[in-house]
Image (cartoon, rainbow, N blue to C red; front, side):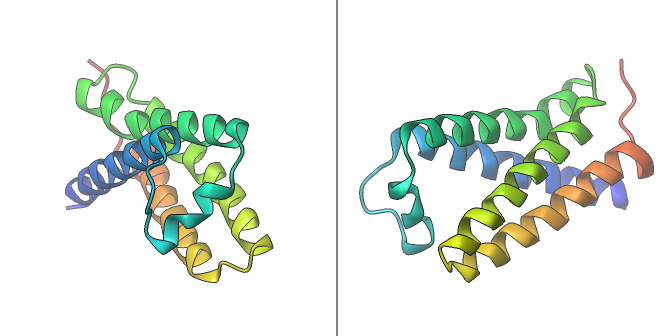
Length: 126
């Protein structure tokens, strides 16, 4: 059962972070209120956040699916967890407490993915 939960979380958060990472590069007008903070980032912040989120999202999915270097999946989850910790500090400084809640939920799920794929149900390499 844990394996199925981990797969669902990997896909859910993988696609989520890839999508959010892409938004950093296309930055459309009219983002919903919870994402309006993106308009206040400078180009470097968009680049760093966008690349980290896209690579992290891919890292949650591809190594496990292909079974090529699946040890990268827990590392991707840890890396995205670090991004979430940075996001918590960013949103705290802006009094965006709803976003902090989202970041905390993401951080907990990413911690579970990291622990789950490192210790509970690791994916065997080919």
